[in-house]
Image 1: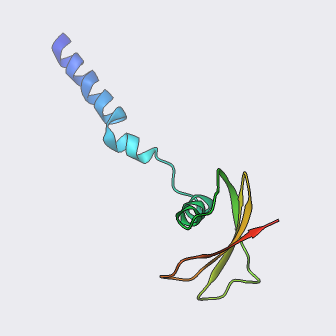
Image 2 (image 1 turned 60 degrees about the vertical axis):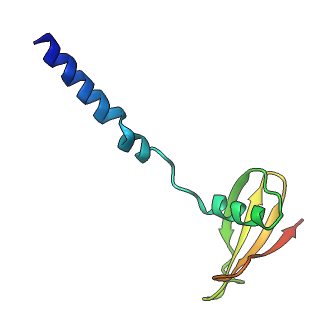
Length: 91
């Protein structure tokens, strides 16, 4: 009986702490994180992305315009599918 309860505890621990349980705890990537990663690949610095908001006035159906606030700077980012983003430092 002692051996069976040990196996049962191991099975419960594996289910609770197994790879699927850990995979579900990974936070979803945020829009500010994605925008920061994109502008970094284009040579701009965003130390810590703090927030992003879509600029409804400048956005078009084929072009999204975002304002990204980082801990060290603020950027206006125009995104067109399959092209590099147009990045404008603000301030």
